[in-house]
Structures are given as C-alpha cells and as structure tokens.
Image (cartoon, rainbow, N blue to C red; front, side, top):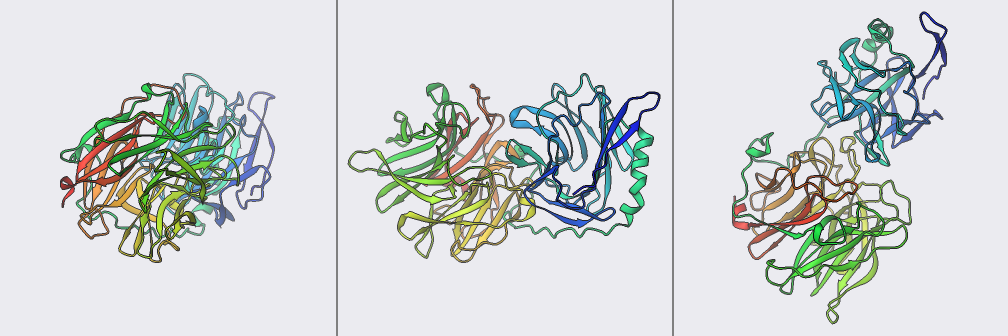
Amino acid sequence: MRNLTLLLIVLTGGSAFAEERSWSLDHFKDPELTVRGEVVQAPGVRKTSLLFDGSSILEIENSSSLTHQETGSTFSIWVNPYSSKEGQQMILGKNRYSLNEREWGVMIDKDGLYTLYVRQDGWQTLKSEVSPSLGSWQHVAFSISGKAATLWIDGQSAGTLELERPVSQTKAPVTLGGVNDNGRIWQNLVGALDELTLSHRVIDQKGIVELYEKDRVAAKDAEKHKLPKKEIFPLWSGAELPANPEDLPFAEGIEHRTLLDARDHDYKFLHGAAIIHHEGTFFVNWANSPKNENQEFETLQGRRSSDGGKTWSKVEMIAPGFEGEERHSHGVYLKHQGRLWTFAARFGKGTPGRKFAGLSAEAFVLDEDTDQWVSKGIVMENCWPYDEPVRMSNGNFITGGQDKDGLPVVAISHGDDVLRWDSVLIPYGSGLKPSFAETTVTNHGDRMIAVIRGGGGAAWVSTSEDFGRTWTEAVSSNLPMPRAKAYLGRLSTGQLYLVSNYRNRDTLVVSVGDPGEETLSSIYRLRHGKSEPPRFEGFAKSKQWSYPYGYEHDGKLYVVYSIGKEDCGLTTIPISALAP
C-alpha cells in the first residue's frame, strides 16, 4: 500500500535529525496499515490510489506516539472527495472520542469545508475557504507543534492557530478515511486518498508549496474519477422543509408525561422504550442497566397502566441481567392469537460481530395464569428488532432491526409461528456509512418500505416487492434525519407516519402522509430544545429526546422515547391533529 522510505534530514543550523515517512497508497498490502472495512484501488495522482466507500478506514499500526516529537509534525496527502454533504468526513485523525482520547483531525466538515480540529480545553478549528473539488485531486497539508497548528489546501494557507499548550498524547491510533472510535467506525470519507507523507518537523510555507508543486501537474493530468450517481428516494412530498426546526409547528393537543425517572430507580441508564395496549392495560418496557449503555447486567424492564396511562405500576423485571458477558436489551411488543409477546435483544457472547457478538432476540410471553413473563428462548438470530412486527398479506410477520455488525436487517416469521424467524440483510450504498443502521419497516399494500438510520443527515430507504425476502439497495431520501433510530408505521386513517429526530436529537417530530400514499407531506414537532441533562454518570448519555416507538390506540398516537438516556418519556397526539 505504500512505498515506505526513511530519510534522515539534517535540520538547518544543527546536528539534529528528523525522520520522514511516506506511503504511496497504491495498494492495500502493507503490514503497517490495517484495513477496517473494504477499500479498493482507483486512479491516482501518479499510479493508483485507495478509494474509501464511506464505511471503511485505514489504521496506522503502532501510531499512538507518531506525531509527538518535540520538533512537531507535518502531514501531506492528496484527497479526491466524492461529496461534501456526507456530514463530517475525516481525512486524517487521531481520536477515540468514547475513551476521551481527543487530539486532532483534518476533515471535510458538515459545512462542506476543509477543517482542521485541534484539541485544547475544547476543540479549536481552522477552516479553509477553498471548497472541495469533487472528483478531482486536492493537496491537503497541516502541521502541529507545541505552540501552533497550520492548515494548507493546494499550497494556500488557511491560517495559523496559536495553541495554549501542546496537544495531549493519547493511545489513539492515526487513521485515514474515518475514525476507529473504540470499535465504532464513523466520520467516514467517501472518496480517494493518495501519496501520504509525514515529516517530524514543522514545514514552512515555502516547503508546503514545494510539496504541492511536486505533484501538481500530475494531479491535474490524472484520470478523472467518475462520481457515483446518487439516487434520492422521494420520501418527502410536502413543502420545502426549513433548516431551523423552530419553524415547524407543534402538533395540536399533544401531552407529555414521564413514565420513569432515573432518580426513582436503581438502574441509571434507560433506552429504547416500546409500548402496547393489551386487555385493558398499557405495557411499556425499555433497556435498563446500572450505569452505561450496553454494559454487563443490562436488562429489559417495564411498567403497566390500567387507567389509560394516568398511573403506573412498580417496575417489573422482564429479561434479567447476566453474570457473564451476555446482556439483554430493549426490544418490541406483539399481540398474537390473544397473547402478549415481547422480543428482547440479547448479545455479548457467541458469533463475533463488529458491534454485538452473538446478537439474537429472545422471546418472552405473558403467562395468563401467573401474570409473569416467561422466556421461550432464542427465536431470532443476527437481528435486534426495533418495531412492532407487521403482518404481511402472505401471513408472515416482519420487523426491522440491525445485525451484529450494525448493518440494516429485517426478521421474518414463519407464518403464525413467532418462535421461528429468518433474518435478511438489506443492501446499502456507500454513503449509508452503517455503524448503527437501525431499521424500521411497514407495508404499503404488498410493497414493504424500510427507513434506515444512515449518513448524510437524511433518512435512508429501501423497498421490497417480495415480502421482505429481497430489497433494493438502500439510498438516501430527501427527508432530514440525523443518526438516530426512527419508527415507521401506518395509522388507522391509512396515513404513513414516521416518528424521528429532525436535524439533531434536540427535536423529536412526527411526519405523516396523505391516506394511502407512500410519501410523507406534513411534519409536526413533539419535543424541542435541550432535554434536562443527565444527572448520573454513564457512557453515551447526553441531552436528547431519542429512540421513539409509536403505537396507536383509541384515537391517539402514543410515542415513548428516551430522555437523556436516563428517563422514559411518553407523548400522546390526537390522530385528528395529524389529519391532512
């Protein structure tokens, strides 16, 4: 993958030496570079380059101290971006955010501009006014010392950032094309990289221009990259949507209630609530763990209400925790043949996966005699179910989910036998960047629609014409949606609806279509603004309204969701308020 050279460069005015290293990035058979995901060869500046599909990265082995020499460091690389609207696309970075290992990164930022991030007390940034040239090569270079950081694009300086202190050294590796955030691969680049060099010294403006000029003509004359055609699924058919969520109306007649407050419970992490009404009683459940998301001893717990949601029972244990590596987590409800079922995620032990080893779903049924939840064992393999299973016209049920690698998947029952399900993966395009591709499905006649959490700030969509057995490649839609789980369903009025976040997790909305239509055309706010901040320590907590789950009953749409990943919220909306 690279033509590694070690050059001893005599520094002016002294006998000190610095090491320069270079990687040609012509191929991917380098023992120093680990591929996570898949990269392929493409036309390069000189010969070939490496193309990143929006879900893969390269990681430089043993690179935690690579840029912490006293003389400072300068990186130089050629970039051929395919899109400037894929969110944050890391070109080079040295960060593992979840481990609080934050140092630096150069990326195409959300605003589509080349940006250098340097960690001080918080992030300090430098932005270039030179826009990415899609499908063509651009030279990106930056230097970092103990006192300053500078960014250049095509030999032009974007300025210098004075630093208050040297960047702290962490164990985070240097990565190309994205970030390996302790196993989570994200901030991925869609495009190609070529000719990487690292100098253990700060190169001045003249030196950067020389680096740029060395390959400028070759880069200009290089074979042009053909940009992939980006198909957009028309999920939204209403008026142009505003950038500011405050310009969206609130749904009329909405009411809010908190179903569980973490201050009143021993388990301080809560996420992924589900709701259903059965035999005069509302049932709600959620994932609960003592402190952190997806940690050991995570459980499925819940409450009931027999007075229409005014008061709620004591918290009940549905799927208990484990002493070992396994854990239960949130799931879905199903009423079937007069009985109430819940299917809870279970993982942590078994077949290796990028996200959830041994992922499966365990079925629990409410025993009519004892009024207790009874396990019926593992019924789904490689699927974490996310929405109430929908009955298809061929007699099978279907639910959306994600698989052990964080990829989009559905599970399909064997008719009325809800103890046997088949898992089917949904193919996806490069821009999806699946990391936690949570999927929700519903039907439009015999046509199945799946809405998927993906990249680029939009909902991704795939469809099936054969009852979920095969799917179209998932593509971006024209409906704004951040990386967060959504819930898709159809109201008794025949209206398609989607409960999701809008732009970010500060706003929770419900979008609805006209009766019988496959698109959404009206949108209303449910929750807006920062939620109360988490009151207890825990991994992955923040201010947010997220992971909604919808259920219609007696003229109202009931939506349950996480509040800061600590509390369970409930919002009710009159169905009449969603009429076209």
